[in-house]
Length: 223
Image 1 (cartoon, rainbow, N blue to C red):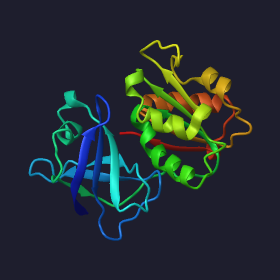
Image 2 (image 1 turned 30 degrees about the horizontal axis):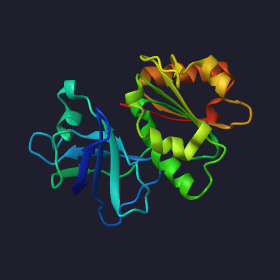
Image 3 (image 1 turned 180 degrees about the vertical axis):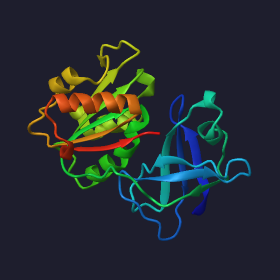
Image 4 (image 1 turned 90 degrees about the vertical axis):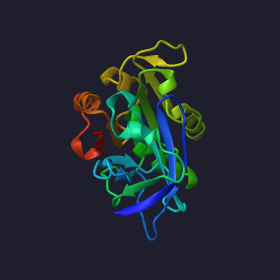
């Protein structure tokens, strides 16, 4: 475990926090990985939660993009009250999502976070071409880093909203028909999936119906 100071903290939209911390010496992670995070305060030290690194591994800081749930009276609500200089306790890096070649990334809400560092890394290496992102959210205001993703992915950035009608976006849920409409399941070999468990279950079931075998799926369920 390492204790790090927060260097910068602010909300990037109505409920998503950007946190930048010090980086412990010799700390390493791969794009897509996460760590256990706790707040270094008496009542919260043992309350660990998994959060994904959303910056590049070679940077000399660590960054997290965290969806907060103020009504839950839990860790994310407390994180929203922190300021620069407060401390977090970090564990080692872990995680199942690792880039294994071009494919379609399917994210629900905060499930986008493991993909952010992967996209940034591929963009830096100029090898983002051939990848697509399907991003499901409730409303337009929930789309995390919309401008950055649009800039990196262009037409390969596909949004769908479940709770709001907007002429610029599809409406509904990421289901079999939506995947089939936007994705050539033959040419895109890998399917990276991350989101809340109910969304994950539904998407995995639909991928199975589309003939996508398990070895083509790379996934991580959000807590």
